[in-house]
Length: 360
Picture: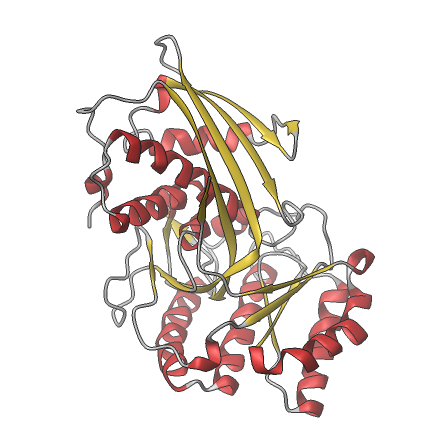
């Protein structure tokens, strides 16, 4: 599939007005994407669990406007008009205009809200941009009702990627691959796909408790961090490592080897932050309590024999991962030992989800 395949031709009548609402989840990468080429193309493949409770709900209202040559939209975030998001959305519209030529025909009102704190390392751009892309695809579906569900999902993922790279992994679930990998049939740099091979029952309904160590905005945005990989001294080896870890995970998903899963996923998390520590300029997104939680998880895993592990996104918060059949003991440990390290004691119990949903 080439990018040109996603261009909507102006052959059909466009609706005069309407409204669509989508709820789209965040996702947590197991193999991390860090570093990108032009047009939001990843430097390495990644694989993620789609989440369930951590999501963005976006309503897109649209009405035909007088013909002019500009984008016209308002953004309402959690009930209040928000100008801060407008530059990012305008950039997004510019990137996708070729593929959705009706964008300048409408005035849009974008109403959006999260179930989790914005810009705190729970991939709010992933859920937000994927929800917006899905709303726009619902307009395309009105224009061209013949498009298949497969095409709808692929193009939604393709568009979401142009807003935020990881957003392309939030359209479907539960295990999603983004980035061309020689051993994964159908994998693409342009959009994400459902992992196409056997997955052991150990990884079905996997649990993710997110410990909100710091709910404030990150000191360094993910966009800046990705750009710092261009001249990073360890970038080439990192991209090779990620691809190799994808191959290793294929065997892990098939066999259900939880110990090997933990080794790969925790190493990936720490490598992501090692790239930040060794970029120029260098930066640290982890907080002291992030490290306290990691050490506590290691100690508890050794003492209990449970398959509890962690991963990190580009932020201070910790995703605590564990299989469903060990949930009771892991949650007890989290409540007794780890919640004390969270800002205001806040945490979110989540589980693996199955993608975005159109709201009535």
